[in-house]
Length: 109
Image (cartoon, rainbow, N blue to C red; front, side, top):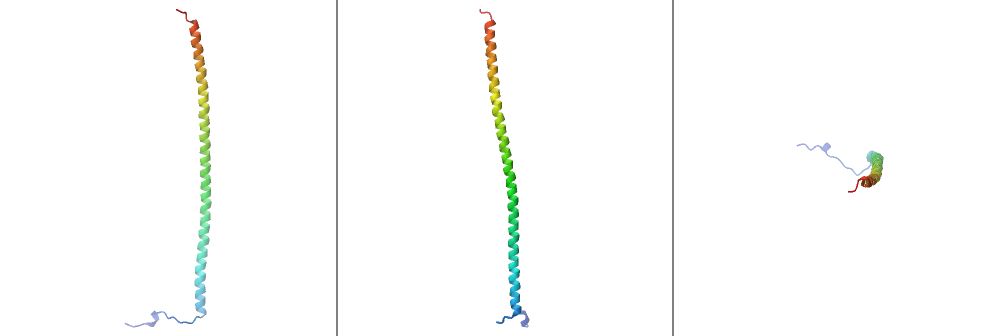
């Protein structure tokens, strides 16, 4: 087996311009990626928030219209019941009048 020195990294205590340049490129790359990711996620969150706000307001509008329709229907039912009570009362009065008139016209015994 041949011990090839090229396969193993060599570390030296000296720092030169190339090392500093590599470190700067790595920092800029990682920092730029982090900033880009943050801005993208923030933009996505704002878009989702806007979409949810629109959907929530649509649902609130639907709920309000359903509640309004329900209240209108209850009002119509109460008005109908009041009209029917009034009509039944009039029919009862008419029937009582007819009964009284029939009682007067019938020969007694």
